[in-house]
Length: 191
Length: 184
Length: 135
Image (cartoon, rainbow over all chains, first blue to last red; front, side):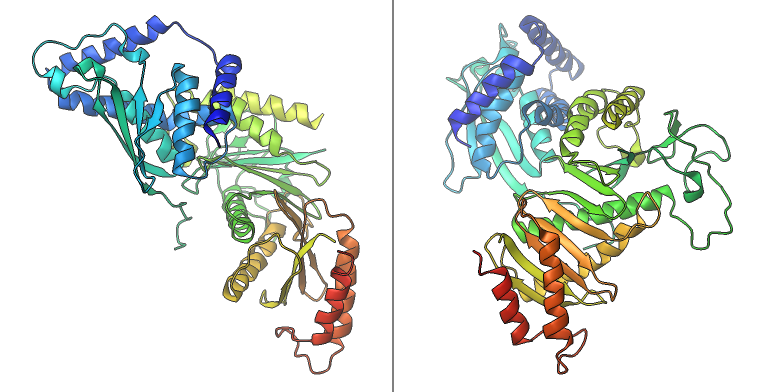
């Protein structure tokens, strides 16, 4: 499906089929989750990243069904179509943003999502303890969401942030890699 | 226009939900499922928990010695149905490519309708032969009932081993109501 | 006529005839067709067992998005599988005619071994003439 068609679908679903909620509520709720995790793990930001990814993964496992139900999408033909669907329809429907798909590798198995805006990180400043700037990926929940939801549609992917404006980088960029396509499960006893 | 039964199978080839209507109990001397001998109307989840549904009686431990090699238990039925739809769905894909999908089949006595989501969740409906294509109905059940009441229920698990977390009251009530409107 | 292909299975589910008439289905190896036939034979038997209503025969019609398959099982256990385009009318008539051709050019051929793969040139010829002239 072309990028234009995906954008149209995303816009239409966002306008007509989605209940909206106050953005500040989302930002504050997410912020308090991250802050509490940092406190609970006493500044072990690597562990906080892991927990955020895990939470995202659990969200993604369920979110995919809602996504499919609201958008009536069928299976994507290839990974490029998956990327367009994620950026123009997925993120649009759930966060009303459309990150750009960039930096494809030649084998078509890796791409980047560049976020111009990130509602989760509005008004956020990372703590000044010298470590958060280098270790914490604030929006790591999103990586887990992608991993969980794509796993449910037979794709094993790795998603991680490579840069974040909260850390002082120029852009917020997430790198997504297709590791393998998961085969159908066979009933027990059949190989 | 009669609807006989409804099944959901998850991506691990397991039956996670069964609902039956219009069963004549002399054809179903079940050996599976739940508590013995009670007369409550029943619909079965994969783990045999009962919930009231207004469908006809399903007596367990019903001895019927005049029926040698008698009818199948509900669980075995579900396994066979899964085998059938799984094989037919693979056959269609083999013959016609991965974009094609199996929709329904009909025998002399009943019709089976099938719908599979991209997350490999499989919905199956058995009806009489006069029913038209009910794939849209199955899609509606997925979108309006399953996603709303099962997936979005934070207290129900993501994997539904033995049907755990699927037969929630809202889903059952919604399903019952929805099926009734179709039959009328 | 929108007939895509025809398969004939013997009593035991072995494939004894396979022919494509129109584009629409993928071209598979002969081994693939054999496996398909065997699988379908099993599935057909189960479809009568899982019937919610007693006295059901096996599967007669199967629909997918891109084709429609009709299965005609004779009283002798032979199955004719006709694959056609989804809105092909009068498949029943076509099935009947194919059965007649089979009865004539296969069964009445004394050198044809029953239950074995069909290699009767007359059957092929007449079948082709029936299915394809109106394209």
